[in-house]
Length: 237
Image 1 (tube, rainbow, N blue to C red):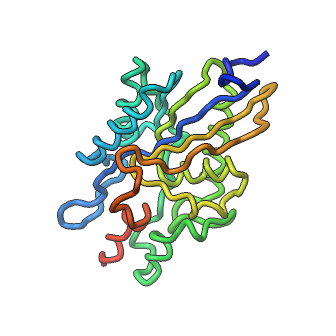
Image 2: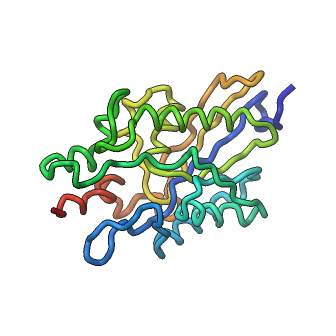
C-alpha cells in the first residue's frame, strides 16, 4: 500500500516542483560583494516569485519547503500563500559555497567562479570552497529522504542554482558531469516526477527544466547564472 496518494493514473508517482529563488543583488552600488547569506529579493525578484506563485496556484500542493535563507523564503511565500500552507525550512538544501576571493589568483578567477561548474568532479571544489561531492551527497541524501516521506503528492522546494543543478543531475543519473549543462535562471521552475515503491526510489522523470513563468521566451536572458553572479568579481583586486 502506498504511503501517499499517487498522481492520477499512476501507481506510486509523486511530483516535485523545484524552484530557484528570485533575483537578488549580490553587490553594492560600488560593485563590492555583499554577504550572500543576507541577500534579499529585489523588485525584480519579488515579481519573479509572484509569477511562480501564480503559475503554481492551480497545483494541489501539499508542502512548500525552502533552504531557510531569506531569498528562498521570500520566493516560497507567494507559492505557499494560495494554498494556506506554511513554508518549511530545510537547511540541507543550502547552496554550495565558493572559497575566499583573496585565495584565488586573479588570472584564475574566471575559470574558478564563472565557469567553475564545468570542472565539477568527485575530488573537486567550487572555487576553492565546498567540495562538489560533499554537497552532492548532502543534497541527494536529503531529497531521497524527502521523497520517501508519507503524506504528500505535490511538493514545492525553493532552493539555489547549484543545488538545483545537483538535483537535476541526480534525476537524470548523469552525476556531477552534468552540473554545468542545467542552466537555472532566477525564479525558474523545474518539475521532477519520482516513483517510490516499498520505500525505494525506482524511477525519476524530468518533466520540465528552467521554466521562467514571467518570461517564458527568455527575452534578455543571455548570460548564464554564474556569469551574472560572479562576473563582477573579475574586476576586483
